[in-house]
Structure formats: structure tokens, C-alpha cells
Image (cartoon, rainbow, N blue to C red):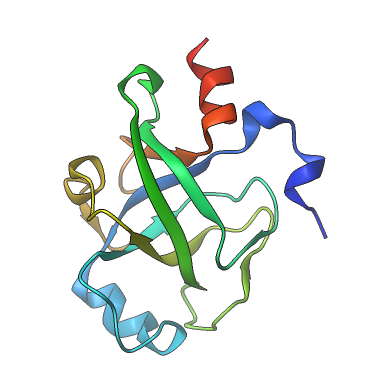
Amino acid sequence: MHPESDVPMHERMLIVEGRASLAVLAQVGAGLPEEKPSNCEVLFISFAYADIPIGRTFSIVFPTRAPQSALRIKCEILAVTQQFAKPFDEIPHGWKTICLMKFDDGIPDIVATLPTVNGWYENRDTVSLCDEDTWRLNVG
């Protein structure tokens, strides 16, 4: 178990690599809910900084290389799976996962314009999700 409280505040960012393609959705669909509200996106998530439970929310999104371009949002993890379509109750520490994320005010352009990918490592132009305190430490 590796809770967020064990991770330095400035490292508590979830890195989004891209949006899942239709082929990926067909492959991992059994690990995600059948119904996906219109304000949701299935995203490829990079290595998790901690064990992050379903229901965890984030309040900031920004281009990983440009934290000064942040937007305030409300984003919630609704479901977590991986390439074998096994559902998880959290994003396990150190794992790359595929997550159903809900954006309360609609999917922000910064996420909607991410490339559609078939796997991890296809896109290096990532975006980050975090809380206000983490963002402030990284924007310097």
C-alpha cells in the first residue's frame, strides 16, 4: 500500500498520455462501466504516483510541460482497468492504467484534443491532473 500521504506534495500529479481508441475500448470494455456519461473520457494514465482510489477528484489540468497554462476543473476517477480488462477499485501505485474520468463542467479542450491512442508511450505531449496545492508548488 502506498497512500498519497506518503508522496511529496509536488509529485502528486496524474499524467494523462491520451484518449483511448475505439479498438482499445472494445478490448478493455469489460473492465469499465457500460454506460459512460457524455462528460466522461477514457484515458491512458501513466505510472501512478500512489494508490489512488476511485472517487478521487482533481481540480487542475495543464499541459505537463506548461503548468502556467492551467485550467480549474473538477475531474473524478469513475473506473480503472488495464490492458487485460480487469476492473480495479483504485489506480495501483506504479501502474499504467486506463481510466474512465468524469469532468463535471464538460471535457476541457486540453483533454478533448489529446490524440486517440492504442497504447501507452504513443504520445509524449501529455497533460497533468492535480490539486491546487500541488500545482502551486510546480508553477513556482
